[in-house]
Length: 328
Image (cartoon, rainbow, N blue to C red; front, side, top):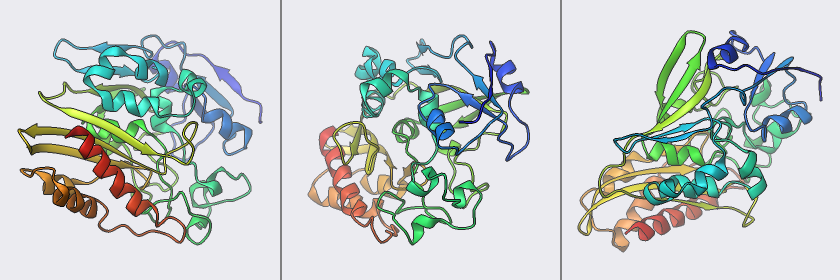
């Protein structure tokens, strides 16, 4: 691991000023829980001169409920604290389930909400320090014609990574807003617009964060009356593993019929993949066998599996059916 200078700012503004201002300048990196960054440092995927530690900035580790029922989550809230919060479990089970699905208890005790949303790809080629793939400034996505069991079936190209965050699909389904801080102040971005495809903008990045911006807080709006929600994830091992496929669903019923639904897929695309056409297909329908089959087909329409990941299509359809059956 390359030696670096450790900075401990006490305000967001001070932390942001310690970050580079130019795109592509990797001379400084943020430290939250450190679960992803330390791995990148050890594998020489990043070699910054400066690490900016956020743990001394007050207020970033708080879970706060507003009078209107809205929820504000600091970027340094641990996944364990989010998963175990009684009110979150009661009113926003989709968030608790997503947080609880991450890794092991030890990882959840250290990993943070902000870190989970900003973690880098888990693709074998990206994580191999000797493979200069497209995500590391190379000219080729090696997964496209190589080993691609875990890669994208939707929205891929020119890179075929999948976004590894479990919280991201849940927050997109909830219509959350992300508060980003920079030396110039703060701006608010919808969770749905925070993540980008490799074909959009800079292929080296997965979010719209500017080089000197910090994800400070996540704001979840008050859930509309009658909302039910869940997050389902399938993984190879029962614990300590990333998703092969996942689905986050928020639904409102009018008797036996669907009034509204928001559905977001995880681990099948380079960003949380909202399936608006499938959502529209369910409006006004009962969740019978025909509707469940139709929504699965529509959600995966346009999927383009690679050589080794075609299994993700039926797997994801099955997760969608299970999630809707659970909520109905």
